[in-house]
Length: 44
Image: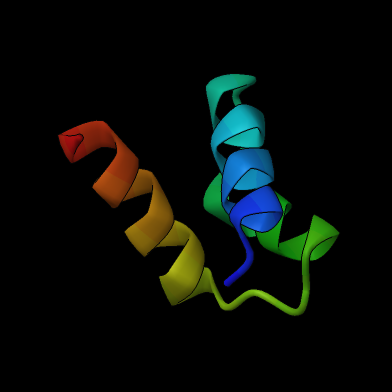
């Protein structure tokens, strides 16, 4: 996954969007990838 997509996922998550809402805005990214990105950033 591209860095820009990861940054957008984190930004949208911080704004209160759910994983499902983020997925609707980025259908090319799977729900599992979105969850993994969020979890990875929270652990960092």
